[in-house]
Amino acid sequence: QAQLIESGGGLVQAGGSLRVSCAASERTFSIYGMGWFRQAPGKGREFVAAISWSSGTAYYANSVKGRFTISRDNAKNTVYLQMNSLKLEDTAVYYCASRGSYSGSFYFDSSYAHWGQGTQVTVSS
Image (cartoon, rainbow, N blue to C red):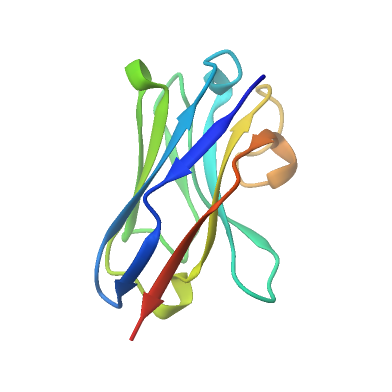
């Protein structure tokens, strides 16, 4: 069964950096691309970043562009989200997701077939 395991969340001061990771248990579903979404308390889930597994093309939400970097390690079946210059509004549960096919936009959560359990990122002042 496909499984995504996130790690690396935690507490960080505003302006600091944090890296979260997502390890995929099977590579078969990850070849279509992987993404990160987040959900803050009282808000809906929103797109953060995504990466095409084949080309390495990255996609970012405007709110994180220039501060966050998504990358992948094909050998380890792992995707990373490096978060720099963190802001209070970045506080959320961050979810890793994998696409089940080439269909759909990278920006929409409906394009993703599998989800991790989430990792908490808290930015303090």
